[in-house]
Length: 295
Ligand code: SF4
Ligand code: SF4
Image (cartoon, rainbow, N blue to C red):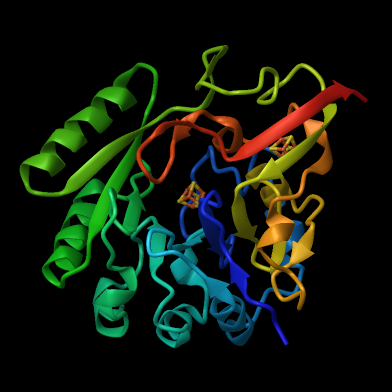
């Protein structure tokens, strides 16, 4: 019998990575590049839709904490629509997508209440990847979803400089003018030899050497095979899962434990970046790191 997992007040994010497959090929994608290990993960037994439903049904989530579906492109998961419809009604969901799916089918099969809650940002969040998904398609599909009653927001990454930055700013203006919520995200990582982003722990991103530390997370993140990780870097690399989402005794206390890590220096920017939490308060990081030392 699966125990419930009742997320605590400080546990801020719950995400099921339904699949790491994608129908786009962005050259900066961390799933495919940068040490990501999509190929070996593809050989693992991915969860069936019934297993994902059991996993979601054990979650007790606060009203302000949705279950986020992400990937890859989560709508490519073959049981996507069954999952959306069959999980217990009190689990509200968010969707991170590139919007490259059959919009009419989505509107027909997805109940609006599943992706509808009061939040400072849209529950359906679309990433615009210039050169990969076409902005005219995104605008058309977003308007269609909005007309059907869904709340959708578009996001683009703002490069530190250059024509791509200008393009994103123009697209933002165009979207805002026609009633589409378009927000920009800070560029994180190395650009032209400079590391961009405000990270809480020095040397944790692209660090000069790997170090050992203890790390604990505020998130419950689950890969396509059901493994649970303490951070995104571990998840994308299939490195050291600490549990499986279908472990009977897994509960919210397990998320809180400090765990030893020997990959400090190879952290994913989004885990150690100082950011805004769900209350829109600045200063939060997804993980807490202590006792950093040489290996
Ligand atoms: S849309 Fe996202 S998951 Fe797909 S290739 Fe681009 S960055 Fe990767
Ligand atoms: S120290 Fe970095 S790589 Fe290690 S678990 Fe924490 S966030 Fe992940």
